[in-house]
Image (cartoon, rainbow, N blue to C red):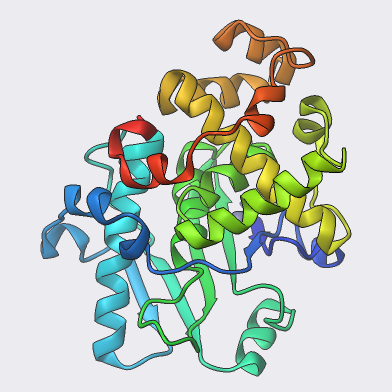
Length: 291
Ligand SMILES: [Zn+2]
């Protein structure tokens, strides 16, 4: 059976023909900078971590640091988003390819790393993930590529959403939670600018977006609004309810699932999500807030 392949290179819809989805991200910092308290909660043994991540493209020493970091992010993402405190090892390791030049990144991903810094490719076989790969630019000052944590969240989520891909807003919104605080602040600033100028999507329209908006400006609003909605809903009733809501929204629809799980009306009740917002720092630094 041929595997289904999902390539994610976000914010470049023109490359959508590559396959079903393409995700990317512009920037993210070391997760350690943004999640110091969260990171301290997840310490895996070397033996447990051995098989999940492979890193190529950099020195052995740097690869070891990136691998250790990626393993921590993986465990945190499983725990915080999918309530999996002891996630199953990946039989097919996630290959992280770190690119030192724009040419190398473009050759692998198909687009210059001007506005994007990472891409994820996932293959499925019989509703299980059979291949995982992340391409990231590694030319910054940080040892760990800035886009890594965000992309890794997409990979982790694929384990849960192996039959139906998550709605794009939910997928990106959850990944943004793992971006650096600075990056999240930028997304939120984009959102607040859009709110001020009446340029946000309705919740229903946001949920219905199957692909990234065409323009960079609309993409920025999309990330900001998606992240705000995810933060707000998780703050309402925790990540477990949120994941069940996302699962159901793929089958019974966004509005019906919202009513079922939150008792909220998609038209009348979601404005506070982007007009009031949830403090970014609280979610970044408080592990319990994501539960
Ligand atoms: Zn993404």
